[in-house]
Length: 237
Image: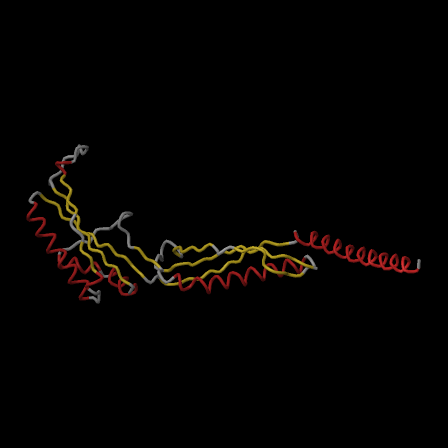
């Protein structure tokens, strides 16, 4: 009889302990459930201005006339003079590419109703591709000197503009990403402070959106680098 009584006491004690443990578990679950939706999504921004480190300069010249062999000879002479001018001003010959002339036979233009005093329109393009942007820009500013050799450089327009690039962007990415994350964290910390909470761990983050744009239309050789990252933090009391 005494043994049965002791067994019942032990069973009752175990049940009591189990109820207490279960209560803590339920409380913890409720607290976790309440906490799990407490989070904040913020954006971090990093910007930097840099000089372009690559330039592509198409140099266009035109010849018009009726005698095709003579026009080709004149185009060849023009190309040689342009190359000499570039090399004399510091451009490496490997950075110069001479394209085949583009010939338009106006007599063969089916949809051209205009009458011309010449038959052929020939365009020559010499392309300079260089990492020495400052040197190329200085030569572009002095291309009018070719007029002394009876060479007129034609504007490339929308099809053949001078193109400036920043090709070293990959090396800048880690540092800019780190700065963007720090800025995002500062914003999240301020939000947590205002809501009387504490910043917890990162729940979700993206790799950031990177863009390279001209600083403005007047200075395409100065680039504006920009990265925006979105990070979600959890909050705790």
